Length: 77
Image 1 (cartoon, rainbow, N blue to C red):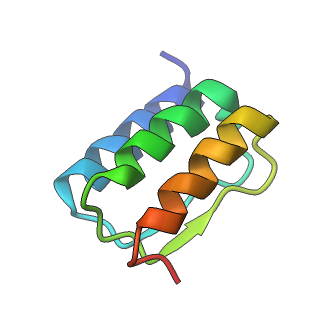
Image 2: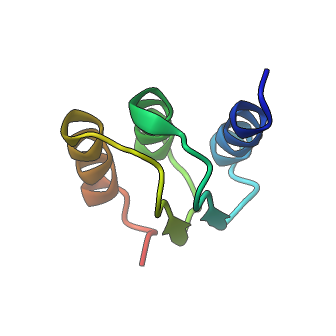
């Protein structure tokens, strides 16, 4: 597993556990697959308040999934 994938995997687990409130994945190249997995995690009850996804090569479908997840997630500011 690459470092970027490990970073995302660890972040997703912490989101699911509700143990993090801020997530900076800038420049981790999570791509569409990672963004979709992140959207699914954010749809659960998460405590994320801050999220940085700059420079991750996220396409329109994955971006839409993230937008929907964030729309439903009331903790992100």
